[in-house]
Length: 380
Ligand SMILES: [Ca+2]
Ligand SMILES: [Ca+2]
Ligand SMILES: [Ca+2]
Image (cartoon, rainbow, N blue to C red; front, side, top):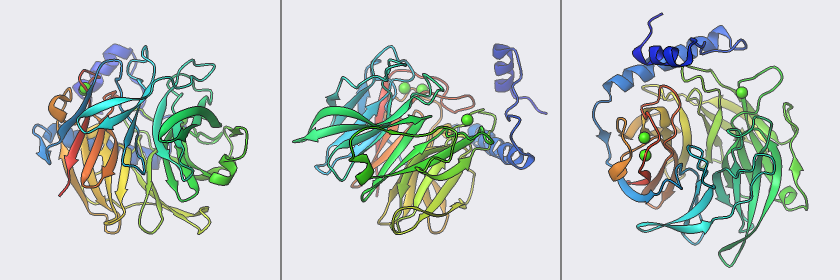
C-alpha cells in the first residue's frame, strides 16, 4: 500500500490508520472506492491551474454566515439561500435573500431543534402552496434522527410561522418539488443491514397539508422511502449518500452521492411513486463526490457540484457526456473562485453557486476560511 503524505498526516494526527471501509463493505465496493480515489488523486495533482469558465463573486458574507448552502428560486424571481453555519455554529443559522450585488436578511430566527438547540437549514424549495420548505441537517449535532423538514408559511412574500412537517430524518438534505410531490434526500438513512445507506423520501402536498407532524420510522423502509442507495466509502471516509436532487424533462429524478460520486436516475410512475432506479453512466474522469446539482430541463444537462475537486461539471443526461465547466485549486474563495461548491441554482443564464467551504479529508479545499462567498457563472 502506497501511503501519500496526506495520509501520513492523518495517521500522525489521529494516531491510527483508519480503514477507509467498514466491516459491511463488500470487495466490489472496495474496488469501486479504490478506483475513485486513484482518479481523484490524479486530478488533484494535475489541478495546478484554473480551467474552464471564470466564476465571479456574487456575495461575500461575514464569519457569522459561514457555510452558504441551499438555494431556492421563488416564482417572483427572488433567490433564497440557507446558511446552516456548520463550519462554525457558534452563530445561529439563517436564511438570507440574495440581491443583485449582495444579500439581505430573510429569516433570522429559525426555530431550533429542541434537543440539539440548533437550526440547520440545508436545501430549500418553494411549494405549490406558496410556502417555503427546507430540510434540516442535524446529523452534525446528533446521530439520533433529529433532522426535520420545516415549512415557512409565506404571506404576501413575507415569511410567517415556521412548522415542523416531518421529523426523524437522519440527515435531511436535498429538496425538490415536482408538481404536488415533494422529494427529500436523507444522506444517512441507514438500515439494520446497511450502515452505508441513504434514501430519497417522497411526500405529497395532500399529506403535508394535514395538521400535525409526520414521524418517520428510522432504520426501516418507512412508507415514505422512495429509493435506497448504498455508499462505496473511499479514503474520505464519508458514508453520506444521496445529496443533491432534481428532475429532467421526462420527469425522471436524479440524485448524486456525496460519499462516492455516483449519479442515480430514479424513474417514476405517473403518480410520482417508484418505478426503477439505475446508475447513470458518466463518461470521462470519475466524479468522486457529488453535492448539489441542478438540471436545465431545456437541454437535460445536469450542473453538478464536484465538491471534492473544487469543480462544477456538466453531465448530459441522455448521452452521459461529461465536461468540466469550471475548476480551480485550493483558494479562500476571494474574487468568486470556487471554494468547495455545494449547491447550484439556475436563474436564466446565471448559474449561482454556494461555496460551502467546510471540507472533508482529501478535498482540494483544505480549510474553511474567510471570505464566505456565493459565486456566479454566466452560461453561454
Ligand atoms: Ca451511515
Ligand atoms: Ca472561503
Ligand atoms: Ca477554503
